Length: 172
Image (cartoon, rainbow, N blue to C red):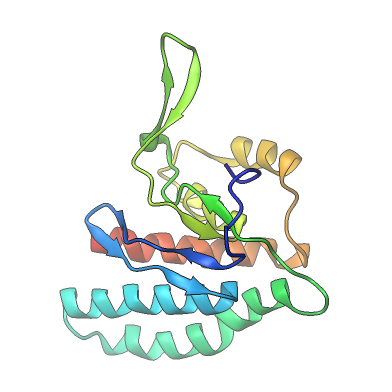
């Protein structure tokens, strides 16, 4: 999917609403991964504030998260001569959404929340300790998809993507 599913317009997002569990995700399109990630993640944090009631600590943490952490980790992907290509991702790939077709013996994935994204975003959910898709899968993945540059930021980017996944889980 990450090799063949290239964005038809070169942008990040999707042209229809998808669902992550019961949470509708209005993707829209963005020319920049940083802009897309910021916009959609901010919506999730705002939804959480609405659902759980205002939390001043979370609100105060959102400021450095969006003003410092996100630009620091995502902007280098698309500056300094670097770029990333938006590719189709599953969007919710964990062991509960993967199985094997017993007749064909082939893998099957389902319950997708797909959109065009930075391919590494898919691995954020793999960081979660409850996910059966673990380090062994990540190591095999890197054989086919090397870590984006700057590679030194990879683990921190992955933690950032795991934060997005965690925000979604809070809403489910």
